[in-house]
Length: 174
Image 1: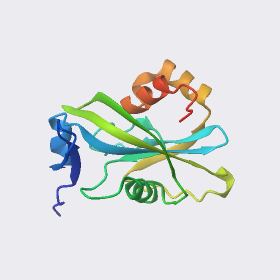
Image 2: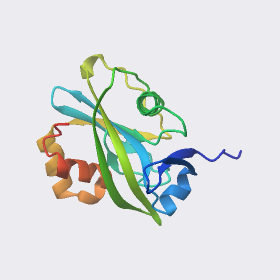
Image 3: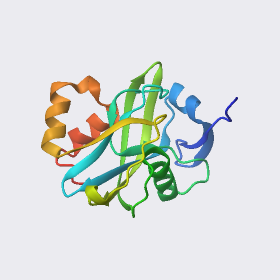
Image 4: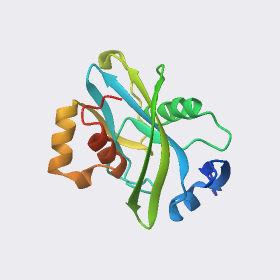
């Protein structure tokens, strides 16, 4: 079975968007749009360990979910879609801020992203998680101090973007 290439929005020097194949954006370190979702229960953040088979950063811990919008897809729609696809649930999301970062993610791939961050508040005991095993191997809840301590002890166990987010926002106050 062959998969259609995923076309995402990249950002030109003049700020305009243009379509590009997702792997090309990562191979060529093109500046592109992305979303990151952070689901909290009080101050505990739901994190996921990416499936080992992911095309980059497999087996590493990441925020609740993250992705790239399809070409011409609304950012919030993308965040909602990927939350459902990766973790099997939907919750109301709130757009919080936009962050830019650049990071080597291994295997000759590079993230250079303009990320719109979304948050949600839930009661974890009422949340019906159904992670897709092709996307997520396991989930857990960590408070900001626990997350910072684990990243300090074993930074290589976490995705570059989650390490960047925690460095910039140590209390996860988005």
